[in-house]
Amino acid sequence: MKKTVGFIGLGEMGRWMALNLLKAGYEMITYDIDDKAVRSLTDQGAKGCNSPAEVARLAGTVFLSLPDTDVVEQVIFGDGGLVESGAAGMQVVDLSTISYMRSLDFTRRLARRDVVFADAPVSGMEDRAREGTLTIMFGGEETMFEHLRPMLDVLGSEVIYMGAAGSGQLTKLVNQILFNICAAGIAEVLPMAAKLGLDPGKVQRVVTTGTGRSFAAEFFIPLTLDDCFDRGYPLKSAYKDMISAAEISAEQRIPLPLTMATATTFQMALAGGYGEESKGALIKVFEKMLQVQFRTKEF
Image (cartoon, rainbow, N blue to C red; front, side, top):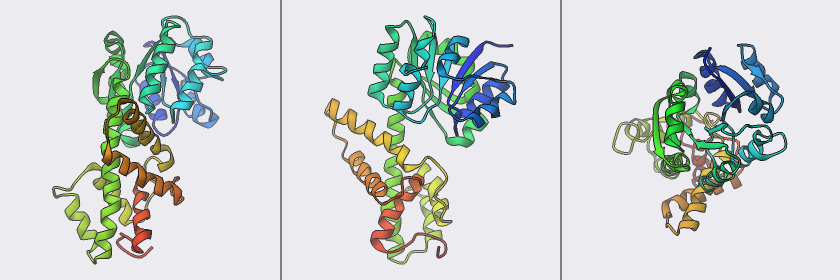
């Protein structure tokens, strides 16, 4: 049996990452607020816990896969959190996508308790989490990275040491901003194509094979044509990346005009009531404005 590891957060991404570590032979200690999610792992040999503090008592290395910055802070520092019982030298590896600025703060606060924190956000969506082929961007001590590398290789096929603490979150934010700009561009332009009479299916063929192609186009346009907006991260949760970008822009005095325009598109979609839908639903803002639908048929 390999070493014992903790895993907190068994949602869409976390459950597959935890399961892959379990299958690789690691003794798995788990916690999630959803008992059913915990049972899905304990049924396969993991041990379930009643709090993050209990996980910290049993595992010297703890992975987090959580929805946002506030939840990460609560799990680490809140009542029943990791720091209540974590021993000096405990390693906390945050696979979540959270605020760059606050991730740096967590690193400093944990260092005062002799707990080592690393930010290692992942990219690749649920299918790649299941396959163990995620892209992982690691920020933290390089010696910690090398120590954890065998576990990270179980989770991802592209595992990259980005540099000091915060570097992982900053790299992930760069990736997410570019993705979001592409998604917002698709949302703005495709309704124009429909309004002026172009065939949506033929436009898809061009946009996903020509110079305008992007992962956002390849992922979202086929789903949009089928009126499917429930695949992918919900807009209300994805908006956290735009908040992080705005924080850095203000703090560092770096102008990000396209990013701010994209944030406005997100805000319009959230105000329009599309927060529970995927980023593909950004298109509905402009469809409503132009009174058209970019679909293969009427829905």
